[in-house]
Length: 447
Ligand code: GAP
Image 1 (cartoon, rainbow, N blue to C red):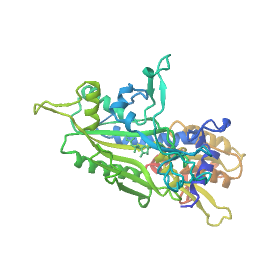
Image 2: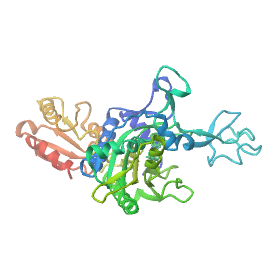
Image 3: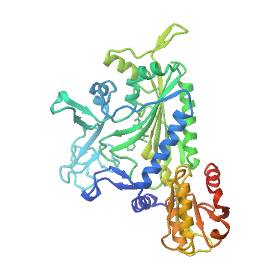
Image 4: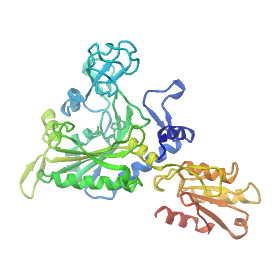
């Protein structure tokens, strides 16, 4: 991996339409990003892979799409109003803000010796104060404390409060899970590193409701499943690891927690992309207490009722997209060519475009045949027709956005109805019958 891979990726993502800074023409919004035409496809493919693995391919997990705005009491019950805080330090001189645990701060903030890491002044850092990370807004026409609502800082609470609705409407029996993908918002003090830590992001969360006493067995099961899923995206196993939460890191209600970490390289190194948590009965018990409604599972055959324990898997769609991009980015020399290439070696299922389709030259019926092929394939696969510039350039443009195959119509094609298909990674070109292209692509994309 290139040491400056992040800088190069940010530039590639903007240049090729994966990711843009939000409201860029106004100078940008801090740590908020927009996904462009290729980025939205990449992230959608990733979310589809998750949804397939977690919901469609299983009969013990149900899908949900809960609203972002929820009753404000939800966040009191969940502990977010009181406890979703970071200690914040600000500098009276340069007005910059830092998390109190920022390793660049020298000395104890609030004392004359403490030094601001931005302007270097001593004694200008205020003592830490608690800063709640939830975004607040108002519901209805009156902006008073009674109308405060929050943008959800995690999707999980929408699952807990719908536990009974989902269980009773689907007649699922424990153990079973509820999964959803959706936006979450956190007013992070120190966001950054591109889409790694942002203020608006998407989570892919699943809560698995189990009988108390079986929770650690399910916890181990989900740890294993989730690591396998990340590997199935093509993430290099050497760049993935588990991090077990220490006693200090563990939330007071958590019985066990492991992060799946990915090595982003550079100054970031190994960082969390997903958390797997054994949350016991904390969430359902708290919501039952605050709402006054029973949140229990009725085990009719055995004539008993209990509050299930929850094993949670909580992945970031944007952070995993970043891991996929970092993992895929390569700069290579090409045998027999003076110019190197930049390539995104994306798993074909994630690639935004599955095939580039080119006429070798813009004459002798080649563009017409290539356009026909593109039109035939387009209802089945995202394909891209390109006739601009030298053929080598067109291959490079597709390599750079991770397109796994390039199909070229050449002089021979119009006489014998064959085309070449080039593999992004091996650079091997095979000649195939144009009528077989759909089947060939289907077979190669499934490999
Ligand atoms: N419900 C549990 C929960 O939200 P978390 O560890 O705070 O757990 C889960 O978040 C995942 O969400 C993280 O592993 C990360 O992938 C993603 N995530 C959290 N904060 C984020 C942020 N500010 N920007 C991007 N992704 C974030």
